[in-house]
Image (cartoon, rainbow, N blue to C red):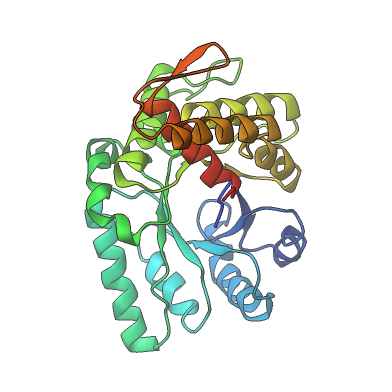
Length: 288
């Protein structure tokens, strides 16, 4: 399944969950963590469980639980036993140990409550300082992953930074490093690389530029925080007809000359990296 846009929906807003189904996102992330106040978490679990029970069996619905280091995560998992969750979003992940700990808790919950599915995990991999030194570990647990994503706000809070962004919305150097390492770690694990949110949800032009940059750099999708962002994100991570046509020509050129290492196309040299890029683009586009 394509994961271009993954739309966050607060777990304590059942009205927004139903509306989000029509937003066009490739996945919804029902949030039990940051967007839900501590006093509202119990009600949010009930709302999320009720939504999972009644939702149409279409689309991809994920749940972001609370961090494993606290007591709320176990309550999240217990409340959702018996429900069909397509993927779990794991905040404040710190390498392979976090994935293994999650599975241990998941299995423990399944044995006691009897129905937590072994759904894939989307860890948020840069939200603590310690997490930054463990990004290379995810390749060892790649079979359990939906992808890798990152976040700047929790990391900047953990570091005591005044901001992760400059006045124009771009990231300061430490957070550019976090973004780049997430991209490398995802590709090393051969899983989708999901870029972080663009907080200014009314800034359509800024979002379009940020999403286009993510697609250019090698991310395959992006988190969204508002339904209005979804069409812009989908457009950025959907190859254009012109790009698809060009990729087809590259693939055809190498197919027609299977022994060639380097070819000419439109007056430019193409070689094995160009072929690999073309094949990946066609795979993202769903082109046979």
